[in-house]
Length: 212
Image 1 (cartoon, rainbow, N blue to C red):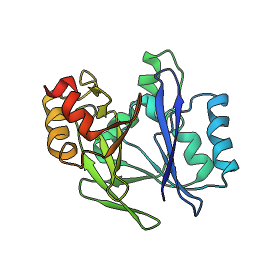
Image 2 (cartoon, helix red, strand yellow):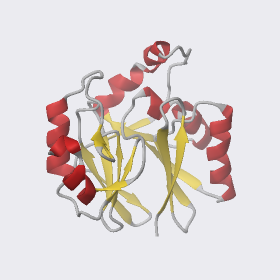
Image 3 (cartoon, rainbow, N blue to C red):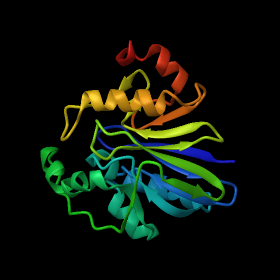
């Protein structure tokens, strides 16, 4: 049985997730920790639960979702999975930091690119990858069908969608991707977003104002 632990980090109240199971295997999604206190919180959870981080996965590479990426890679020494279309966004990390008044070093990590239609294996649990651009060019959603949940990054939120006024954002593309790839999922599918509270596909189909 998979369990998910969320952390709210950094100036953007970004959701970082740890997915883990009874065998102590774990995946780390969107490490956004940006200071010692936040890093200690996530390190403590991992060590207290004796978890082994096997993968670092990005839903996309905007600054608030990767502030802890170098730390995570250096600490756990496992590959970073992301879509190729967001590599350009990751390479803008230093420039993005300047816009927020941060002095940041360039990120150097081992990357494995994932694509639409790929399937990842988590100790027997399958995760499908959906490429849903529009918030960023390489935004992806991770879907576990058996336990009915997705990790959606900034594609879909409770009552909202991701911003499309950022670099290479596209409103029509994002709306179409959500309709054709996410809204066809089971209504009971839980949505773990990049910001805010979890929601469900059925609720968003009915009440999300962007789809009225």
